[in-house]
Length: 110
Length: 110
DNA sequence: TCCATGTATGCGGCTATCCGGACACATGGC
DNA sequence: GCCATGTGTCCGGATAGCCGCATACATGGA
Image (tube, rainbow over all chains, first blue to last red; front, side, top):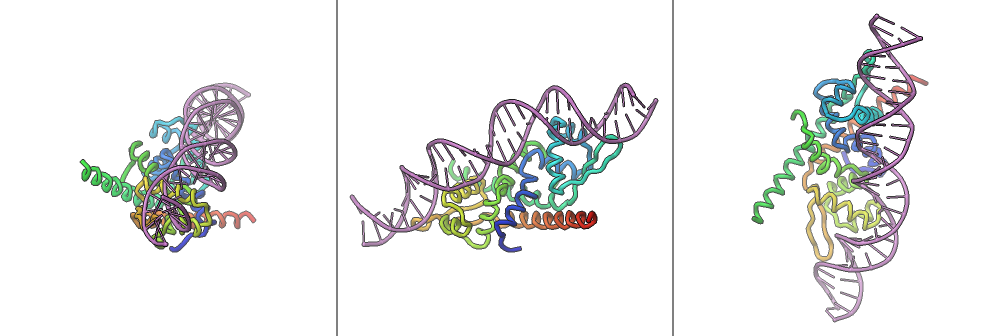
């Protein structure tokens, strides 16, 4: 893939990057990668109020990152596309290397 | 890679995801993947005021996503780790598929 | 030293985002 | 219809992020 037009950058940001631009949403995505879950389950798992979780799920749903399915009174959410985890894992590697690099610099000073 | 602790999610967000959580920063990253550039060059390339570009570069620098090097009066920036482009490209693919999926749903309705 | 070029920052303001609690809405069993 | 369970939304407020302009700061040449 090559260069980005302003429009595509805008779209990529608002529809995809923005989706994982919050620590709670990142944790939700990983939690759903583990297995599909309903709102209450997620709320307990994350130790976060139900209303907050519901709102984040709505964001992820609007962007097509998760899919919902009703099951009795509950609504079960699952990841639409596992590749979002691939992307996040790459970022975790980049982060880990950055931290190592910074730690090395600290060592050089002391 | 497996599950995420709240702390690691926080770190991943603030140090990595946040870095690409703005359309202009995304474009800067891609522009630097193309080749290293100084601030003025980037500002012209993106059609964005110099002060804005400088501030975004500072954010990226603080997170270790880019590296800077002085060259006379100018400061040249370059990408620290190309894998951030890998991650973004995956997100572009996910986005493209999501859009296709949504378009198909629209077709079903009409 | 003075100037031209290039970069970073202070400022003021605006907007977007996130939050938890309370409450309304949906669903299925009785 | 009534209730229990589970979900979504409204509210008010607090915070963080982005912006361009003007200006201060750094660098190297004359």
